[in-house]
Length: 134
Image (cartoon, rainbow, N blue to C red; front, side, top):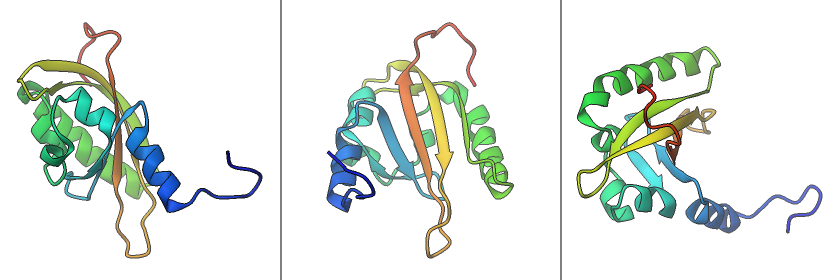
């Protein structure tokens, strides 16, 4: 347990990310996963190794990709204006090709010491899959 002003160590953050019950992935500026947690790998029915280094859009249903790409570029522009988060719905593809309706939330990080920003995506199985995508 963390007390007062103590900050968790990097190891604690790594375990919190890895073991979080919410499916999460961190993308680079080109939209490729640089890290994914166990919940995301399980949701997409793929090993972590098949996700890291690949573009997030690879795992989005083909019918949802054009709109998802437009939302991605809007997010990059919005981040430059100070808006760093958003949400919507889309379908992902599992390792077996099954469409998985998900609710997606995203956050664009503040630039790090090298000026690099990352996108953090959070996916939850969509409780209302009949709703339109994004």
